[in-house]
Image (cartoon, each protein chain N blue to C red):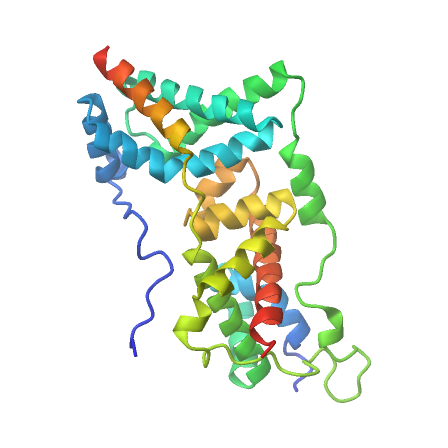
Length: 81
Length: 236
């Protein structure tokens, strides 16, 4: 491995910036050069993408029925003026 | 087999920003929703509540400890939203506007109850501390003669995991548990970003944190959820 390149341990710290396109272009280039020859980090990045997908499938707790009824009443009162 | 990977946020509302010269940043959908509310459209109100109630309640709990008080804060905020509708000019997105009303009420209540949870303290503690993304023993030591800082053994390939397993209820509950176990600021950020699908600007505004802190918190939160998923998925 070239000594000027990123190590795997350094790369994992940059993954969020990479996915969010906030890495400066030179660093992005180093990141991608590393990925191109490292299966471990390629797998890691894929794991992170899938982690985000899994989390994206979670839903928020739905609102309590009583709170929903209360809010509807609030709205009806307000709508009546 | 699906050929295309659905985008993470494909089911989120589309934000269509009208030209900046008007000073209006609310989306067309926002403005329509506001019109519907002004007309007394109950379905519009219900959809708004469904979309924002959970994040509002979570944010309220950042300021007030008592869950019942947090519920009151949210209800007060909705009243404030309805009463303020005529003042909504679209200079912020509807979501930002609603959340700022919530934050103001929550802060007032927190002061009145002389309990304010200084979110900034959590942020400083959680973003400031040194915390490796991946356990250091997964990498060769820095004085390794051949490949310092490289994987001892590669993370496994998750692209080979069938979709059905990756998104199975059990996998989701592992992720949910991991998020529930996060420190408060990290939990707040990952829920807003990755569950609610908020943009980072919105998250920074509502939580009053810097962009860089937001990124650090998100990074650490995701890293912990990944670790939990790795433990679960690599088990068999």
